[in-house]
Image (cartoon, rainbow, N blue to C red; front, side, top):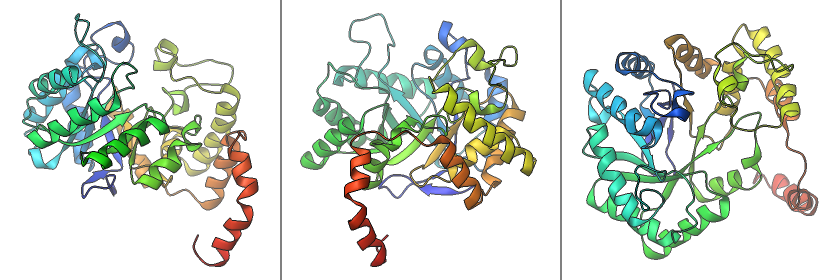
Length: 348
């Protein structure tokens, strides 16, 4: 297990992060993803920690709060030292019947952090993330509320999930102008079957020193090796029950064909190669893995031992490449001469 610097901070997190969306099973949506109870969750958390994972991610909406409860109790049951684990959770989604029980308002954030701390049985949250963009709340209100949480010691670092590049840059600008705690990470969907964030978001993250946490790195199980191009899947598999996230099917299955060939030649699973591809991407800080069984978790953990060759990476990059899109193709054309100057000067 390797450990990477988290955003612009001095914190180091494991390159794999244990996701807890499969814990609990409360509610119609979450029951389709997983329904692990305490004893099963304890086994997964223990196995991940034994493998060197020091990063666990949850959210207040997962299983209607039950995921946070199970995660916090697992740390207690396993007697995990608080300083040995980095706990991340999120706020934004509907958590009650009231009209203000969702969004990124100061009111909802302040209520949300107290409830998350209680469910997790913790005195602080290491990474508190805004789970989605709220068009009803000014970004400055959200940034100021998060800074208050950092100043009060309830939260150590703050991050964001599922925001566009311009929205993140607006928040970073506000934080810099006002001297407030800034977003240190983005949690976003990124796979070899869905490379959309490479257009605008990845360049922004690298420019501003913001870390990238990847959710659904197997595209909701599509890259697990269980699915065939004809649409057949193992009975009860997650994507058969919950077809998410959306992907370009043709490009995805072309990528899976190459993943299968590389996996077969190496004697490893398709999922391991898909995860290894992500771990080779410079912008990625940590990849969130979730599982329903210990053997699934073990298979995902083994991806850290795969070192893809330059040829394998080139093949995977070619088959999964995004189609050209403006203004990207114009940047390539207009910047060619200056990139050559940089290369000749040894600056690239």
